[in-house]
Image 1: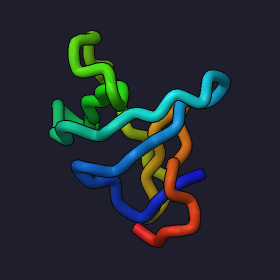
Image 2: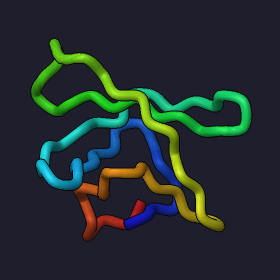
Image 3: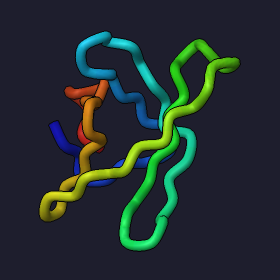
Image 4: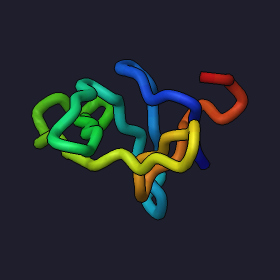
Length: 73
């Protein structure tokens, strides 16, 4: 599932495990947009850096889906 725009503070669910991750940082690197995710409730664990996929006017984090599907971003 994709959203129109990924923003800091959004919650994403990891496919397969169902763990919830928080978007803590969003930045551009060369021609890609990168997102830093932190597992919700696990501030001491390492953060994950993932490249954002774009398809037209939507954005997606591979391996993750929005945790708040009923809310329009």
